[in-house]
Image (tube, rainbow, N blue to C red):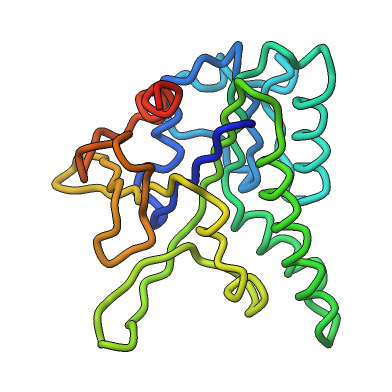
Length: 215
């Protein structure tokens, strides 16, 4: 079974930057925001010609890529797949169907995102699937601010996407330094017991993957 990680955070919090130390020869990057990556020299690492970088905001295309990585021999060398961001998929699908009325489009949107994440849970051993997501901060019933994954439509709110992940990291920029929060602190951040002992760690997904592999 693959390891599944979600990195959530506001724009500029370092979600994409945390991927900078991944080995591009073993990584498939699905750029759903179609904006490129956020460190110097990335174009020499990730490119469609290298068969490790795809720009798409169609959930169906992202799912097809996951299936290929999971099933086809030519992708057996891939150990990490990054889907950045799931909000890029949700918003693009919502905009493409903006003229449609009624419940069906929201049902379809929820189904496509749920199916993408749910399929990743069934992928082969040795794989890590990293999803990134934007966050929204709102008041809970007691008046406290609470941060969670930002979704489109009430159906996805009811699903609670965080429940599909055992590891949810909250990316932040604190005093000019990019970090991850690994446990709930008025947020839905979480990690398996005993894996990430510190509540705040460096913004480096490679170290997180290594810790999960030792778990």
